[in-house]
Image 1: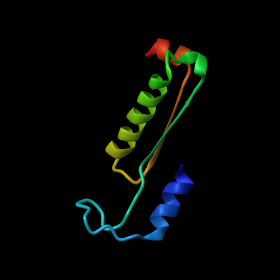
Image 2 (image 1 turned 45 degrees about the vertical axis):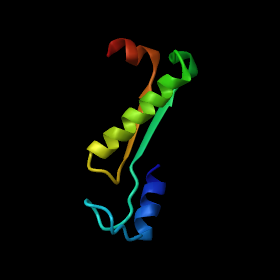
Image 3 (image 1 turned 30 degrees about the vertical axis):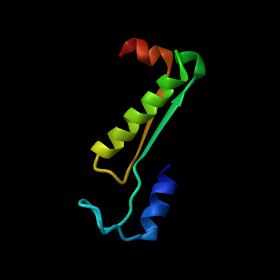
Image 4 (image 1 turned 180 degrees about the vertical axis):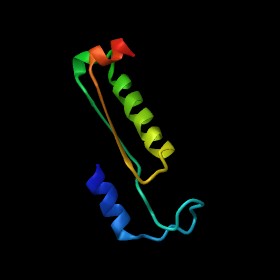
Length: 76
């Protein structure tokens, strides 16, 4: 994820329509899960979506990684 983010930033593609930066950047959300820890595939998609928004909230142009196991969920 970080290599992709950096590769896009290194391209320095102009982004004239952006109100935040003048070039294209990438925010990446990555989640590692074990299928037995999920009730449905939609759970995995929700976790990835939440992680992506966390990357955006961290200032964009970054990579956020989360790993979830059943015991982690039980503790939360």
